[in-house]
Structure formats: C-alpha cells, structure tokens
Image (cartoon, rainbow, N blue to C red; front, side, top):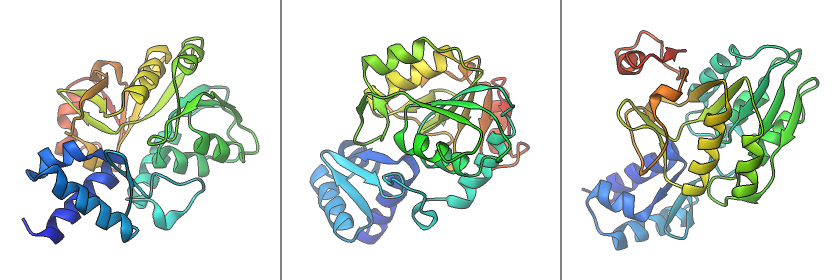
Length: 249
C-alpha cells in the first residue's frame, strides 16, 4: 500500500470514529505501529488531525464552537439531526450525548420547542443554552480529553437518578452482531448508564459507521428503539437492523 493511500485510510478512520488508537490502525492496515505513529505525526503536522498519546483525534470532533467547514460529513449529519428532531415533543426530558451530530442537532432545534435536555457534553450544553425555550442541565465531572464528555462514577450515579423519555445516543460504531460499541471504557460506562435509564433510545450514526465494531460494547441492539442515519429507511443496507426490530428513520 502506498503511503498516500495509507494516510488517506487513516484520515477516514479518524473522521468516521472521531478517535482511533495506533494499535487498531496497525491491525487494520497490516503495518507496524511505528509506521502508523510516523503517519499520524506527519498528518498532525499538516493540520489534518490531532495526535494524542497512543492514537489520534478528528479535528472535526475536537471543537468548541460550531464550525461547519470543520465537521466531517456535515451534510449527512445535518440530515440525521433533522430526522432525530422529529422524535422530540414539548415537555419531554431528553438525554443527549456528545459528538458533532448532536452538536448540529442542538444548533438547528426549532425555536418553539420546549424540552428539558440533560447532557454530559460541555459543547452540546453550550449550544443548547442558546435555545430560547429549552432548559439545559449539564452533568459535570472529569472531562474525557478524547471524547469531550464528563465521565466517572459521579456522572454515572447522577445519570442513574434520571428517568428520561428519550436518549439521543451518538453511536461511534454499530453492527447487527456487536450492537453499539466504543473504544473508551470511561465513555462506555457513561453511555451504558444513559441507555439503562432511558424509556427510548435513538442511535444516531452516519452510514459509514454501520457494520463496524470496536472493542467495548455499550449495548446490544435490543436496547435500541430507533436507528437514525442519512439513508432512506428502505435502503438494503438497513434491512439487518430492521430485522432486529429497530425503527428506522
């Protein structure tokens, strides 16, 4: 594999999953970790990603305000956000995770909507706080440097005291076999608590995340009520999820 092709694949993986480890990239690309480390360093120096210990973060994910030109697959994520908004009703209590899709959803909420949002994402909370009618509660704790959300036992205990109507869950990876998965245990614990307490769960994922799996399970698909993608619900790629009893948006 040529260096240019390899680095293109690395960028794609980073942008799709927001964060990747050197080990996973080495296994996926079938090259040494030293080769991956050098590629990540070069891509970071070119401003294409953010290199961190043991891996890399997507620049589009690692932002603190809305910047359309920095969001990977912005058009697809906007479509997903609009579909997910159709699930919201006045008077609801909604748990919302982090990620650029949920950030976009928070930005384009109808101004007349009256919903109470609880979130572990500081960026999402700041965007929601600009809404004229919705109430926002930020559940604070130790901030994960890679995922940009609050994590830890205090956060999990706070979540377990809630009984929200809906959870808008950003899915890092999702497949019919593995369910919703992630690569960061602290994040997985928080997302597991969000799923456990919610009456309904909507998993939000661009189609590039479908049929992918990471090493830690957030939940099996029987815990997911809605799958929201940019695809038309009749797309053949979504049939395995429909067969699991999931409502497709």
